[in-house]
Image (cartoon, rainbow, N blue to C red; front, side):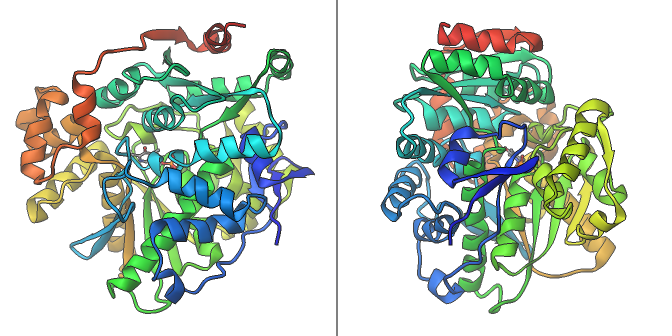
Length: 495
Ligand SMILES: *Cc1c(COP(=O)(O)O)cnc(C)c1O
């Protein structure tokens, strides 16, 4: 069964998977969505015999239907290899009855590696399939983790260049250092004077600039995106929900077809949307619990039906979730609008013009599977400290937001369905926030100075991703104003 991809803003020109991956964003500004969500065609019994790589193939073949078996398997083999520090790729750890899906065992120790290890291979394969001879320029806005994961994935990949924009004062010191020490002749890293939403809006504007696209085409370049708006990011993220369910069956934490809830620390709504797709493929998922930090625009949306980004942007200890415009929510809005692109476009235009929109009651009813809540900075720190003191298990601040929200959910609903809590980053990426939560004595120390101490208290070895950047030379020092992003890209390309 062939799956085609429609834009969320028009039904006119459905494209094949490889074209959707190459384009990243549709020309009308919409996001590509599959015209249907395919059902798993392997039983859980069969999936239980498979490795991560094999499960990845079984899931992705259903979405990326114009890739051959050989192409897809080759991409998967190159992505999920020794770059990951565990053979399971995405292991589940059960602590106090909560199942933590650890997605931080890749090269940059955050969950973005799960998709960005694969995307460069999908993209270069897609280029070959579509006879693209242009050099592909990956433009990326990052709230901290995507940037490094994309740089690591695309560094020195032939036929590609990558430009990453990050908020100069909005990422953790470890995140910044990871990016500015990036090697590779095709990489370019720029700190912008603005926040993540500025970076993301700037990138979207460059994508929508038709004149620039023509000018680039004449010079042998074309843009694509490594952000989670690219369907090539979303599809690989569905895999680990299937694989997690299979692991819980294997461990006998779940009985056959028993439902689980998933709890996801959320920013751009990509990860939790992948869980929603997994549910509709047939993974027995009950509630989708959406956890926000103090930038709680999604919590307010699920409660009231009004999405309102007109509010103060808060810098928190979970910077990868410091987002007021959750791009991937558009894919869900399109669905609950009955796949009506006009209805969706009206709402998205309201968002970009006035910063706010309200969905109808009928649409809101279709969101019953979702539960939203948020954790304050104190609650996040308390979640880290409490769990550490009770069990010795140390969470990063993003995952701690999810734990705090999950505790609120359980208190409110008394729902004791087994829960899979998505652990999105290693605590070593946010050393100071984590150590400060554990003991206020560490509040004034610097991130890198606390690495050994964290390793000692958590009983976890220092990840290679940290030791290798501690003394690495800084290779990128560019900064720009948010209005200068287009010019910055052109300078880099020498056009
Ligand atoms: C990106 C990121 C998130 C948010 O994921 P979305 O898919 O944008 O919702 C959460 N935690 C960490 C550590 C991240 O890097």
